[in-house]
Image 1 (cartoon, each protein chain N blue to C red):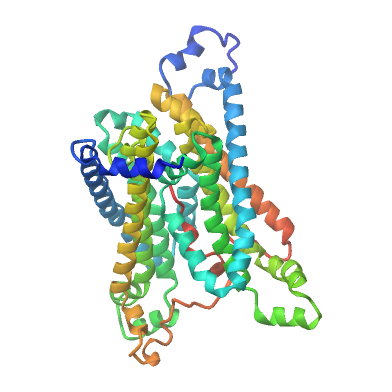
Image 2 (image 1 turned 90 degrees about the horizontal axis):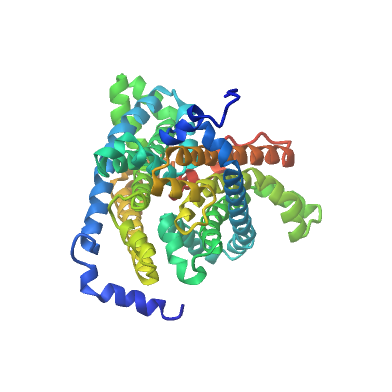
Length: 258
Length: 232
């Protein structure tokens, strides 16, 4: 095992591993493209439902059940089921996209829903009192206040997509997972490790990029930074909500790796 | 299903037709299914228990030495971000193509969830309760075991349930090296395009996950009957 680092480094150093259809760049492109497209589809499907249900205060059980189902159903099983179903006859793209979207929806939906429900009722009341309509309330009060959790959901969904796209290589999809599965087929430990390093780095990079995006787009986070008066943000400080029973289960753990 | 001539052609047909649901498959491969379920449960139990055994000292250490809390939670977040196939591939040089590699990878995930939830649970213990216990002459060990841990139990159990359910579904990936419990059957069914095998193994996975969750919920209610279970 001692020289596995050397052999992995040698694998990375070989230019033939970077070019061509099986090369790192092509697989990386596939992975990123698949993730981006599916993230857009997942958001388009999950966010409207979550925001409207959250606004209306309905469907809490649905949101919780979707999160639980997303955790209990094995990603690998769903991928294989879709690939060997009639959907798989048309090629690899459709089953891969469906599986990816299915597993990205739960974190996006539940986080956005919880974010909407956690909006301070006083803020909602005040907006109503100012004569805002339901739509104005949603867009101008609730959504901005729920934005940090909506972004957390999108970030978790994106990381989930990277993970599911990796697994899609097992039944024959594209992406960086193919480097790992090919490594297993060739009994080439260095290639397996190299592929795993690439996948892990990509997942971490996505996490970091979204964490930065979240910091930039969070207006209240900005308001809390030094230089602003604490008075401006009083009552809006939802980063430190009062502890209750629900708060003891950290939010981040509402998702699972895949 | 009460067809007396179960060996006749019509009954075997579902195998030939490659149906999704096939009674003949269930009957003829019951032994395979049972041993796959057993392996699945063993792998899950080993991973979660290993994670739990490692998580407690880590969480207690991170709580005592506050400087360590940020790095411990940071490492946990990083580990949690790594996709399962990559996680267990990264451990391949250490464990080889053995079941220990799967258990180690899954234990790392459980560990991260559990450390976070144990810390959150212990942080949620009201300071007045601690003060009261100290006033009654409780030492640190007794305070932890008979006051803090029972109060942190709902959060710990919530973490344990998440870790267990996730592990049941993630273990399937071990099918790639033939150490994935029901994942082996899914992998095999994938290679041979055997629909009944894939669907049956997938459904059994979900049943195990739901069963384990209900079992832990019951344990939680028995251990902390004074408190209604946390809904997650």
